[in-house]
Length: 150
Image (tube, rainbow, N blue to C red; front, side, top):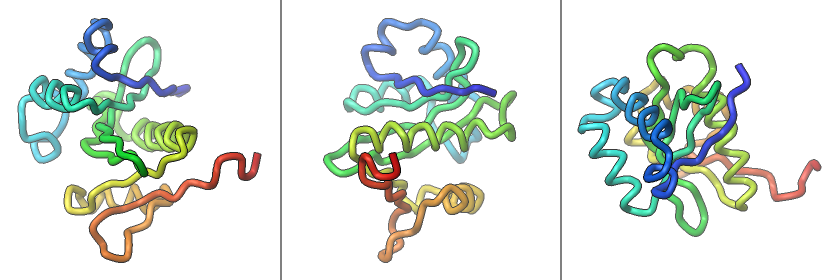
């Protein structure tokens, strides 16, 4: 499945009806423990804080999303979710790989607060190369320096 990355920020949310619909469907499909609030309220609050979503895009639709809170050093990821109809097909792993490429392009690391993760999510991150920091408060993916290996 040739999944690409689509970034959804406030401007895309306001101008792209399909992206808005798809993002709400992604989070409406989220298990309650992953998103304990109303999907639209969650998305609007996240975007109003000048954050964005990295989304898995396939056939003019968004299939998965991860919330991104950027700072000077890293993109802090949370609320990874894939549409129920496309789960267990590698969409989440591909989305995280594409997100890491985008962060690397911006010279940033990826971080995920460990207390927000289920055991299954922790296992996925470890398999994708994330490591738990020494303090144990977050997982981090160290990206190679820009230009390394190219």
